[in-house]
Amino acid sequence: MAGQLSQRQNDMPRPRGFEEWGPKAQAYWDKKMPQNSKKHWLEEEDLDSLRKTQEVWVRRNFIRPAPPGFRPEQVSRKVKLTLVSEKTMVRKGETFRYHLKMQNIGQQPIHFHEPNSDFLLGQHMSSKYNFFVTPLGGRERKMLEALVLGPPGGYQKEIPEGAVMTASERTAWVRRKIAEERVKTELDATLIPGETLVSRKWGGLAGSFNELSTDFKFDKPGIYEIRAVYDDRPPLPPGEEIRRMAAKHASSPSKNERVDQELEMLQKEIASTQNGIAADYRNHPEEELKRYNRIASKALGLVESNVVTLRVVP
Image (cartoon, rainbow, N blue to C red; front, side):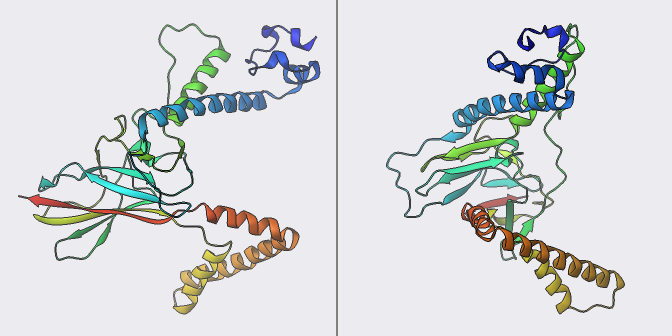
């Protein structure tokens, strides 16, 4: 029988619960299922198991319970962003060190899913997080991201020296180690009302202070005001961004040939997008509208933190 095939006949490990499968399913796995599909299946199983472990780890280490006496605001979904500075005064040329706290102050649980989470990596300079600085008497400007290296070690893993493994065991070991590294940076957690997610520096504990990697230099003595912004505004309706770009180009005519070519390409893309959108809405109008509204309803909007003051001395 298929379920009695020896493991030597099928060098690749079998999924959990394989013994409970019916004979036809076992036979299909052992004889007919392509090797690459088997690998993908097992990788997803490993990732699913690791993600569940990661959820427990994140909740234990990065989520703080609601404070005593907490009362949610009279809104369904809302978060509060708090910027915490390690120091109120630094010397000229030093960097700004901080951590962030994100608290659910609404009435409903809020789910966060970030494949490469800024909260776990300690690099809050992605498209969703921005920092702004205002020198005393000056104008506010956005602090742009400086070159940041990824997590130490990356995803390249070597077999431990002296380990005795078959080829399939080596492949499985490397695959699992890579999955473990990926999941370490993946945030998949739900904050119930009152709970707070606390950031860290890479490799540190929650609440550890991380250096803000930015092009801005605190090289002049004075007082600076710094704030963080979490940008979780709903997406534009399909095709709207393209239409806006085209309108911007059309409102500023240019003799530049490259600009004209870009505008022509945009117009073609608009026509193609509009045809696609029209077809979607024509075939499934209610489903498309529900899908867009569902995505938009989960957006938290533009969330601004408190302002911290940093004094820079010679």
